[in-house]
Length: 234
Image 1 (tube, rainbow, N blue to C red):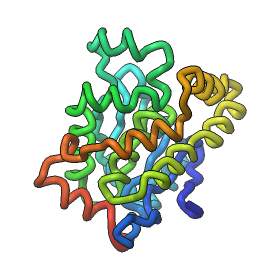
Image 2: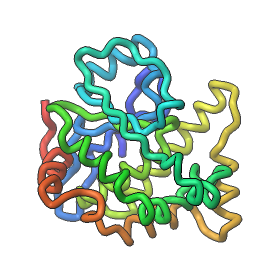
Image 3: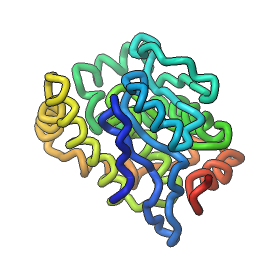
């Protein structure tokens, strides 16, 4: 996974989903889709780096109350596709209190809310030419789940997808230390272990149980896969 991490000042958890081998002997396309934490935290230099990398669409997975002020972005489309079903009281009664910040909620969420990942993947499919940035707040769970779906759709093996998910952990620990906030990774690990499993096992189980046709239409599937897999686009 060398060369995938990106240094965009203001963000801590940015990496390209390209450069990963697929089961079919291809590689995911560099500069096609990037995952990150909140881009409204980018410095002026960070925005310069984002533009220089070819990002032309941002798909923001946060709910309205979470979003900060963005600079003027005449050259970049911003598509807001909130992934948290805030009105689903029953769901949050079971998966609130921090559990939604772990991979424990992935499979229950996908079972209950397939229409929300569907909307995100449709936004990525129909984004303008150029790179697409997918983000949430920390760039780990909502973004991680969508990265999981995208990489699975591209044919990336489950073990590699789990590696990509786990790559967020040290980056977010650095963020916590830099900003002087709680290192949430320690609490996440404890919550998962209390239930007799590991984050890696949860991610692997999610990938291996996927029916990708629940989250992308038959028409969009080849378009999205072409965006994901192949030679680098300029």
